[in-house]
Length: 95
Image 1 (cartoon, rainbow, N blue to C red):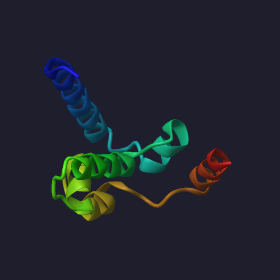
Image 2 (image 1 turned 180 degrees about the vertical axis):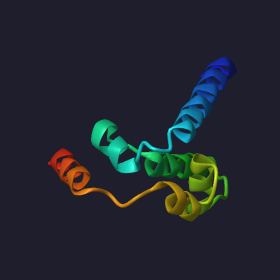
Image 3 (image 1 turned 135 degrees about the vertical axis):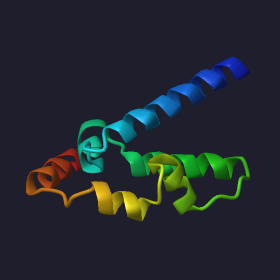
């Protein structure tokens, strides 16, 4: 893969994170229902990519890279409990 391709992919990823940060009202469960992944998934993928490259980061550090703040803080400020409808839609997607 060329360095230009890597730069484009990195810029695209940063834009995705900016977009998610600008749309905090979009809940993780809604992302899971609609797209099959959420911010937590991105954090897990970020951690896995770091581990593949022998980079020492923690799961908390990976999530903070995605959320732009500690996950516990983001959750307290931006994540209300899932509604019954969201939980039902999520359960249907899992089938």
